[in-house]
Length: 327
Image 1 (cartoon, rainbow, N blue to C red):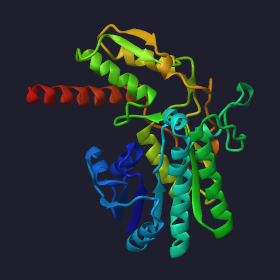
Image 2: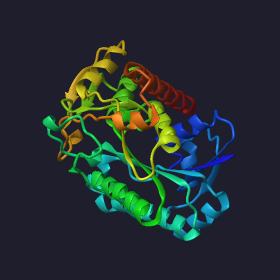
Image 3: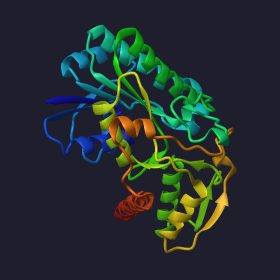
Image 4: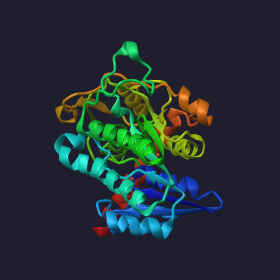
């Protein structure tokens, strides 16, 4: 029996990871959540749940000794780039300081599970077009407090590998989306707006930010599969890009969503949706990860867009029904 522990288990990727592992055999899934109310967002909580704040190292060590995990997927943290501009200190605390508590709790208990650190392509930051695609040795040039915090997590994981022999896998996932993605993220936010327009809740105007940016996007269900293979076949201490190797413009993704809608919608740029600094284009080189694990994305991006839009159609319809029932 393999004991899997997931931090941030009630979040977007965490719930998909639980769903992924819940279909397997000889797996025991443990989900850590910061507060009990987080479980309200979990649709299929097929795991043993423990409420613990990662800032409480003593309690964390007790949990580790109770579970004796074979694998830890460390997903917890502040994952929203835009929010990090408003709350840089909170972002560093949630991502960097809490990871220190996690690794130190493991060190104090003498446990040595395989630990996957969920990094981000944001670590690379500003990359010249001539230096694309991004590979794992591309220098870090982070452009946001969030990106700086992920660089710190990444390098800290390497330090614990070198200093204490921790079995740490460092992943740098590029943009990903899919059903359940919060609407604070661009593509999911656009999908929610379209679903609300279709339902007649808001006027037929799609409010957008910078549509010229180009990103390497994946389906979240491909990402959780990649995390599984990273743990099973990845080399401890190594860093791996998880990406498609292709760049899509935000403008093209919006056009794809609009094609999936039967309603005529006008696009309007919202200055509040623009970042202080933004990366014009980025896409990655996945050859190292493919070589070590055999992973490659399988879900067509058009399917991802359709599934995401249908998710928000259901959410909006459910919200409208609840409002109607209260009247």
